[in-house]
Image (cartoon, rainbow, N blue to C red; front, side, top):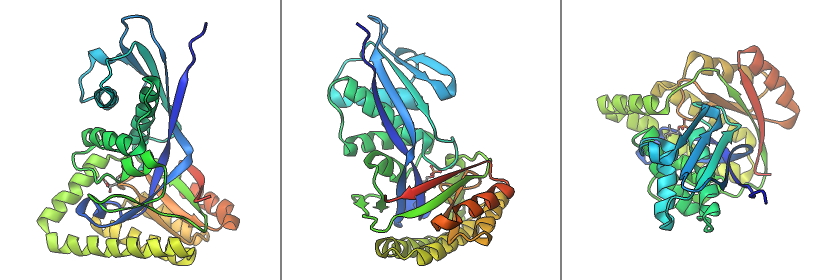
Length: 313
Ligand code: PMV
């Protein structure tokens, strides 16, 4: 009999407002992008093989017993086994993803959440979202030392969240769905470096950066109300203002400014960088009728890929 393959997935995410300042305790809003997904499948392996992890996008296969826990996927596998009190199974776990890496869409977290779901399901005890989120937070610390926790939360719960570090996440109900165009600048950027640079600047001039963080926190609060009321014009203005403040914080990039300008000129209600910046993606809030025009403008301005996401449908 052919053994059955067990598959689990996890979504991409995008931050609507509040990246970076969320690390310093201010609120932020993030939403899952459910049409883009990371996948993990597990099937039984040969006797005494232990767990073999096949990371297709990395072009790498490795046995859990041969790698240290500084490898994020190995760390997640160990965390799942510890949580369940289960011995290492003889199994093959295969991972793949639609998400661009190093772009602010949470690719590393989505892969580790999919892996945790699939491995725990294979072991007969699927872990709940809050546990998966906590495990993914531990793994994220490998990627950058001081994660706020927003990425693991939005991806593990797969719900829009209003997030304040250290507080239980609040799930947002989106009554009026809205459309985002996500555009990749083609510039790979490291979350670790960007977060470390902001920390360094904050340490050098704390009162200046605290004011920026406070302003962005106020934007996130206003954005929450705008999302709640379906006030999309207002949400667009808040995107623009958030982008300005991120640029002042030093995490924008010439190409991100170019893409956000192009989106606005082509009729987007607002646009901003999303995630840690210095490269990666921008998001543009668009009316369904302007999706094509904004997409063309983004490509003409150098976007290497675009994705259309309907949020809250
Ligand atoms: O992983 P990214 O690029 O989406 O960045 C995460 C958001 C930050 O606020 C920059 C960092 C964090 O831990 O919240």
